[in-house]
Amino acid sequence: MASRSLWKMMDLCGALECPHPPVQTWMPYIFSLSLESLKCFQVRNNERMLSDSHGIETIRDILPDASLGGPSCFKILPAKAVLKPQAGNAEEAVLWRELVRKVLASYLETAEEAVTLGGSLDKNCQEVLQFATGERENGFLLQYLVAIPTEKGLDSQGCFCAGCSRQIGFSFVRPKLCAFSGLYYCDIGHQDDASVIPARIIHNWDLTKRPICRQALKFLMQIRAQPLINLQLVNTSLYEHVEQIHLIRGCRKQLKLLGDYLSLYQSRALTELSRRLNHRNYLLESPHKYSVADLQQIADGVYEGFLNTLIGFASQHVYHCDLCTQRGFICQICHHHDIIFPFEFDTTVRCGECKTVFHQSCQAVVKKGCPRCARRRKYQEQSTFT
Ligand SMILES: [Zn+2]
Ligand SMILES: [Zn+2]
Ligand SMILES: [Zn+2]
Ligand SMILES: [Zn+2]
Image (tube, rainbow, N blue to C red; front, side):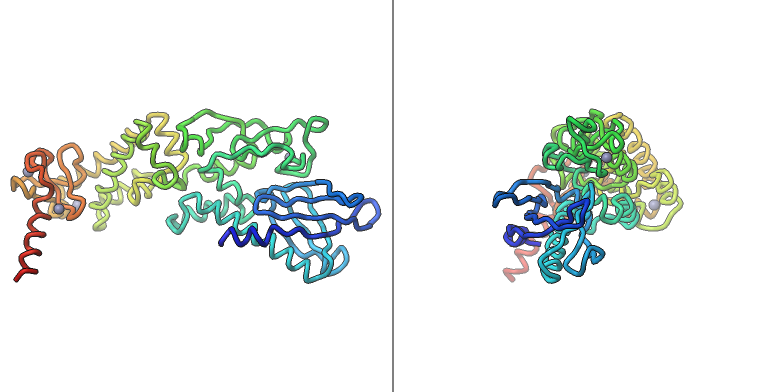
């Protein structure tokens, strides 16, 4: 959705009325909707006073609600409380519902794009994610998985807990900041559970445990083992700046190449490899997909050993298997009868164009690039001249 045109639409303010307890009288309010928040102003003596503000990430839904007096009434469900405004007429109410829905949809879209979604998640992963975000309710948590939140302050939440309707602030319950979402919670929604913050690992290799709210704790536990983080997409510079990650990238690429061999046909070795992967089959699909658990194991220093065991197992199969060795290479420079493979990073190099594999030592002598590609170019030139 083009957010710019949406913004133009949203820049309008609408006058709505809200029920005023204890007697059911309607009070005039002005609501202002932007891509970031829904603000609610009271009008007194022709002056607008901000009475409430709801961050878009805390709004769950907007629904018609005729119970308060007809089709012009609807309700908005922020994380805190419920707003039940009445528009001038039924059409205006519909317009408001459409606008809020559009803002919500665009917000969730951006959150999903931030992660590796875009169709690249397998079915199991998508299901876990859908479950963890409760369809829509916790969908806003997803964005914070890969982006460090900016703390907007308690005011932007209207001094309400982001998880329930309790008022928080200096004269009420002490507000607690969630390091995962950057939102404030009451002492029920936030019980000082400490966790690493995935976005801080991804961007700063910061593995400090910080206090997070209950909602984020639950979300992080549910998605912990899911490969939702594509390092190449969210922060490729981590590969260069963190030596452990740099080493792991090499192992992951090696394992991926070995997986390509073993996945060519159904074998006992493939079954055994899958068992050893222990539900991490994505390791054979892409070298860049990581789960939060993967990142933590890298930091703990146990991940490389895990990968090397898998590499050892798979390469032993390839070296001793007739079918797999047939798919190996003979060095096109020295033509030695030894079969070489692309996953032998220490001794071979691979042409990026024709994918042929050479001895590293032979390639160093030739230096002029790939002899196979050179031959092909020469042949093509000859055939165009004749
Ligand atoms: Zn609360
Ligand atoms: Zn084989
Ligand atoms: Zn060679
Ligand atoms: Zn080549």
